[in-house]
Length: 65
Image 1 (spheres, rainbow, N blue to C red):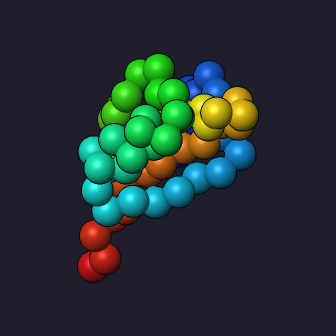
Image 2 (image 1 turned 120 degrees about the vertical axis):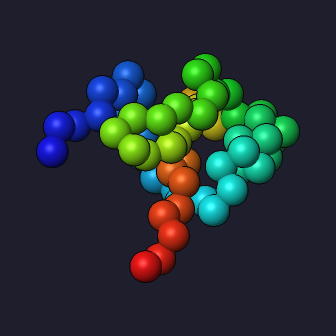
């Protein structure tokens, strides 16, 4: 499986059932997401930097089957 091309090396990857609410929360706390929500290879996610500059990724949680 090909790797996602990501320009930020996230140190933390977090799953969330509500990506839009997660992005709103991150931005309200001072996080900066340059591109907002993206979709690549069937995965929805956003990458952001916290106020200290640490890169993090939030990925939409997949429904359990």
